Length: 435
Image (cartoon, rainbow, N blue to C red; front, side):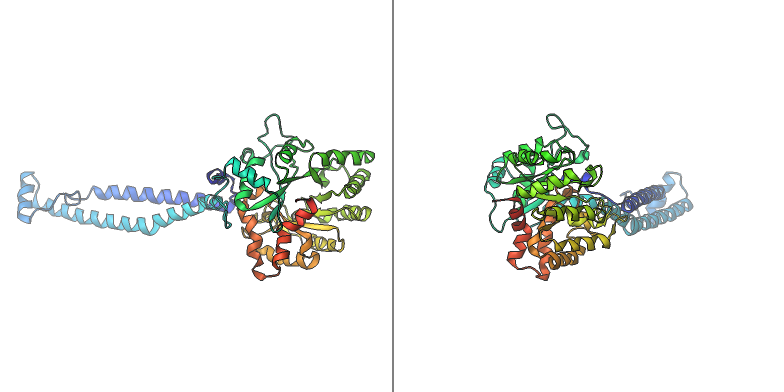
């Protein structure tokens, strides 16, 4: 699996260009050394070829027998010494210049491989999902949630796009065959994750057939967050949600970019209010930034205070949301202030998910530590929940790196053990009904 992930690890443009330059430089240097060594060999005597030198007298006899004058022999010896010096210089050049160039090239071009080989680094994790049988995975999924367990509040799973589960929207080719629900259970077992909320992927849009299959196959392990359909007639909102609950969905996702206008329109408000009455949380995915959707969010919050609202991915305060190591991404302090301001609504929760999307660093995303401190002070540990954004986390540091990040950040000891367990699983278990 880690070999498969090599092709998924993103490599920045500057690193690609640098790698190509180093590779070309290394090739030129090695060709120069090879050519020089061959030229040097043309001046090398029999000694350099492994034939012992004779004494001076015997050498003169030998050269006379071959019709070569002593003067020519002396010139030949000078050429031999020149050839030796040249070879020694070329060897030194190879070790001092060519070899470091080659090593630097290997280091740059192997960056993706080294990152992907750390797919699972947390204690108790195995590499990828290898080594876990189907029976072991099923037993792990059947055990259910216990207090103190880790719950992943945000994952996506899907098939390969073929019948009977064709895509409505395309997905990256590299992620087609490695993100099904069975494989995630194996990854979760190795990472000691006891349950997960499947968020309906945009690949299938409103066709929930594939995710529903996973919910029914692993009812103790998976819960579902359906994708809200904005064209649902307001008077049908209750019946619409009843059908989703029957299939195992405990929450809804509002994607504002699927609405033709405001997601706080009549349909949005009806679905949102009915969700609260039926005990279903609503998640909001502000992929292009939280600030532009604040009016709609506040309108929904005021319309139905009993509905639990969950803000995805730290409110996407870094834009664009393609990954913080992209040099074009920038932090929006306005969006961050807007997120913190939502703490005045006691029904608002925040997912500490998709760390790689909002951090400007690679795992363990240390620059998010002070942001977490701000969220703890504003919302308290009882309204925050960890999530991975699997499978995209595989392409950005690995699944277990995401699982383990909060443990590494807690060196500040801002959280006692109870609060830490709330963020890692307890809050998600309460909001989404894991038992």
